[in-house]
Image (tube, rainbow, N blue to C red; front, side, top):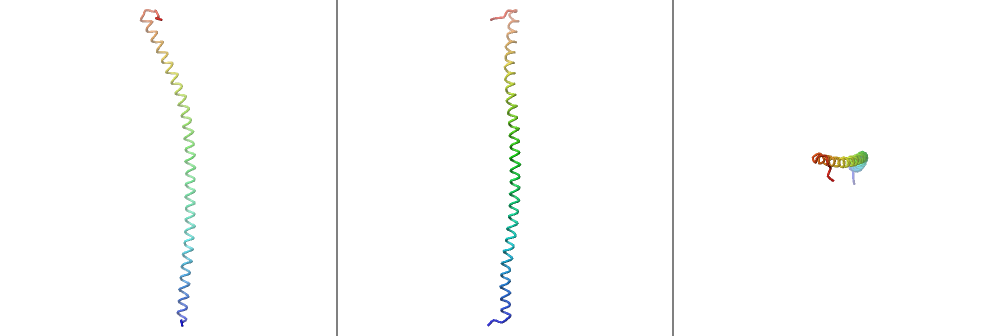
Amino acid sequence: MMSTTEITLTFISVLGTISSIVFAFLAFKRNSHSDTKEIGRESGTVISDLGYIKSSIERIEKRLDLTDSKFDGISTRLARVEESTASAHKRLDEHIIVKRSGGKKDE
């Protein structure tokens, strides 16, 4: 039969094993909870950054639309200036021809 000392040592060994398992489980749960917090924090940061990027892109698109409309206006004005310049050149050429021919305009 087992002596009292052996029974006590066996009981202490079983308690030690059970307490080790319980402490390991509690440590795992604690780390799991802190990992979840960290993942949540990182996810919040990413969502915040995405919101900032989205608003920045919207501002850039608005500026691009404004630039496009200004460019269209400038293109239209440039076309008018080119037409006017061509017309002025034609009138100057006619004036030069009239001067060279002694004041008579060829028709």
